[in-house]
Amino acid sequence: MNGQVVHATRGERDQYRPVQSLLVPDAKPLSVARALQDETGCDEFYIADLDAILGRGAQYNVVQELADELKSELWVDAGISNEAAALEALNGGATRVIICSETLPNLDVLRAIRATLPSERLVFSVDIMKGQVVSRCSSLHGQDPLIALDLLSREGWSQFIILTLDQVGTGGGPDWSLLKAASQRFPLLSLIAGGGVRTPGDLQDLAAMNISGALVATSLHRGWITRRDLQAIQEHR
Image (cartoon, rainbow, N blue to C red; front, side, top):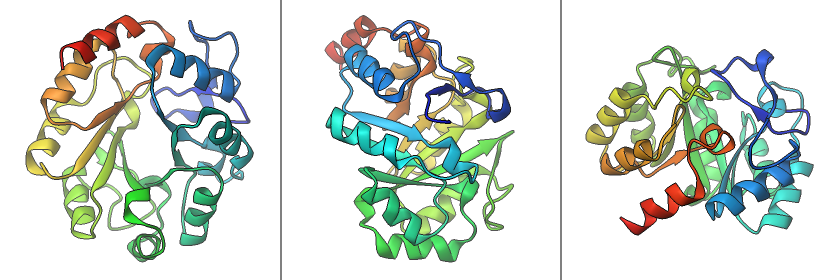
């Protein structure tokens, strides 16, 4: 947001402030990304361009700098609401373009985007608040997340982020009941958990549930999950 990495908390964007991290002294995107990469060895980053999501213009200059410097895959959510914007994201440095339910206007746009971009470059983020999907799309707004996943999978989508906005930045733990139900009902889908991850045990439990991955930020910045923890998890896989 505004060219800086911010600490997201519960989706309350008016409360977001530049991140304060044990890993890095500033909130510059490249500094933060390099510190996270040094700590985790990761080669994939999730980027939410909050200015774009809020309709204030995309920050592809930042995304492109990260793409040039990190040599990593960038999963970018830039509030995509049409196929032209999806292409712009791809050309602006994104490796994978995230289409989020929050800013999706309707299913016709979703179909146009899928017809325009290669499926392997697309991820859908199911944005959830208080147990319901948040969306501009009338077919998704207020829906049970499992119903939304069913609808979207029948539209041909297979890669998803389940983003529980009111858990983001809290360290309160993932939405276990939702993630368990989703993994059991849709075993062939790739599901990424977003929101609430606090401990190494959370990551191990998610893996045991057949969740494909997790978005982790707060736990790293606060030292709840460390390089040693991640190395131990890798050694026991």
